[in-house]
Length: 104
Image (cartoon, rainbow, N blue to C red; front, side, top):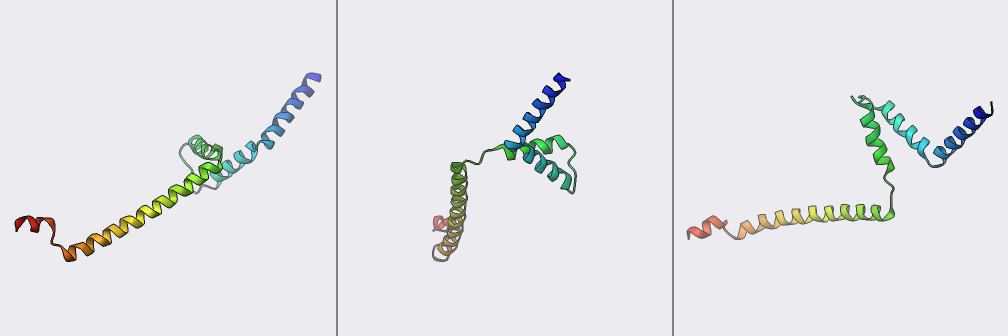
């Protein structure tokens, strides 16, 4: 009987630890996502691993700042590509293509 109470006490402590650390909440969210998935994946374990892996990555403020920086850099890159394309088109109006210049 005493052994049973000690085991129950340890289980309760472990359960509280899991709840306090957010494990239970994260597991519940991932399982709900799997349940709500319209097309169930062939391997539920892979689904859980993938979603738990995404959930376990700590969101460091520095990581978030770097993500924003990358997003801004991508936007600038796309804008520069578009500007380059427009300038090349404009340039072809004033200069003949390189092949025609060589033939002269």
